[in-house]
Image (cartoon, rainbow, N blue to C red):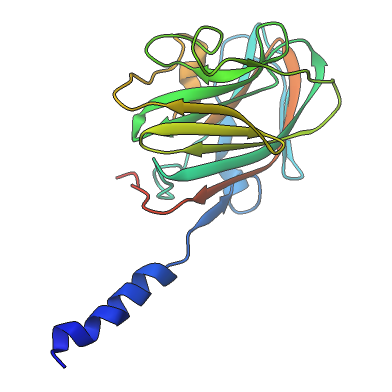
Length: 215
């Protein structure tokens, strides 16, 4: 058998067997890489027991993860999973800012905005979560934990609330950006609240395969 042909099964096996990486961002040692986003008028911030607690700001409070690039986390083909609850207030209790394709191209998964029940992506083609096709209304009860999953692909974004698909958006040839303002201080990855106290726990990032990593 030709040597090149003999090696082919081994190469294929090696690629298929590569274990996809997982990062538990609220557990040691990664917990140390969180810091205040430095938003003017932000409220109290607590990171303890694998849980982020963000008090109400005037109007926002935020934290950011500072090691996304250094830890070589993915920019596409990855999933973000977390649980969140609104302790009090009537607005955003988990705004998750995340990178898409590049470190300087980010968007925000808005949870509980615009009156307390909106879930969507800000921004797509300059349209915020309350204006674009990702907008959905969902009842949230203060004090109740909700489970979320966001999948970031090169050409699409999908999000689940519990086990229900709530966002399924094509982003092919579309402009991705943040809503202008203080949320920009949460890049490339962060968590924010708006006039509300929110808690986030179990924050995990997982490769989905074929990931492009930050430089």
